[in-house]
Length: 505
Image (tube, rainbow, N blue to C red; front, side, top):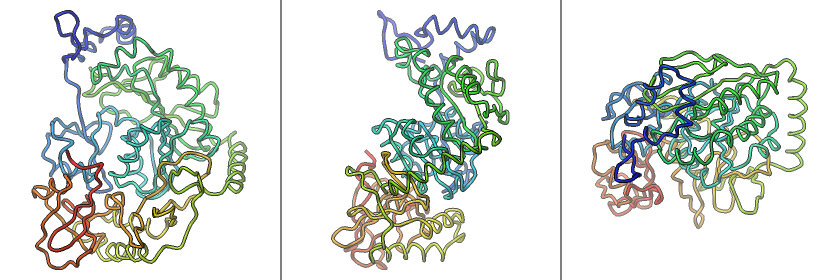
């Protein structure tokens, strides 16, 4: 693998740029495997996709996608995919798959999630883990996807919207503030902690220079602080997955050992062993991925469980305190807003209610028929029937039926379904990504090879010969039955309402 940087007149490979201190330490870890490990840096980095099982089955995706796919051993819906066009296929824009480095699929795959649970992804941007966690909740329960950086969290908001996630709140807060607001609230927590990035040297060679300036000794204290807050937010009986993309024992097993020492109610759980898994150093139930043993980059993961005995009293006190605080502060805002005012459940304006009624009728009429997903129809119906309607200004939202604490920065709560413009309802791009062709009564469903799909994604107006639409009708534009966005019909053409910031360049 060739680097873009030069030294003298020669172009250096990633292997040639690896710091000697790093190589020496890896020799201590790997012994006779060191040369094979170093040779892996001369190979190209791998790429992969993860299928959105809330929209399409793994079998259908594997059959219909025009890529050379090979299953990733540690996840049921992940594939190695070697193609330069992964980000240009229409199914990607419909949220049917997510492009993700295969080893990065490990953390979410090891954390057991059940529908109805309260889940926290503490360091969630850009959204690879959060999208998978939301899928496994199957529309029931709540996912808080957080990143301390508001700028990184914006990418998280977009990726969750494309994925069609609904019962998700996106926050941009420190772990300490989240703990102060939520207390001991979550059944499952994922902490993919910031780290020195050693496992990604092959994929992003700029990390080598960063490692030289800021190595493991800088990150380990931060990781311990983050993990400490996460443990305190975990309910008794809950499980926490700690992961990094580094080989450093100081950032991996030492951090896990430290938290086990300080929280005796925690124990290390043993995940199911998969091909390519290497045991942890001194903590064999941890999982390590090395690039010479798997087709992927380096990763580390440890699954922790909090025992119920000895924690119940503390949990009850924290939960009572949190509920009391929530009563004093009121409910959380329904979306990030400058004034920080709390949102409240409101009566739906007639245009909004009428539009959602159209969706509800279509869902009930088509549930499980015509090859569309029963789970998708069920999840849409659940949202329409159980989420609270909240309006902030002209913005119309459906928020999860769970009271949330105020006082923290929400970038998204639930699903923004649209806005009222001069008394008329305009559906949102996010709502379109939640629907399929069975969910609406005026649909333009295009085959993936129809040239109009790419024209729509570029923002162009489309000619329509169909005569069963009236001027001003909203039309759900789909590809192979899956929502892409909206258009507005008039005079034999479809005015493109695909979100400008997402358009294909």
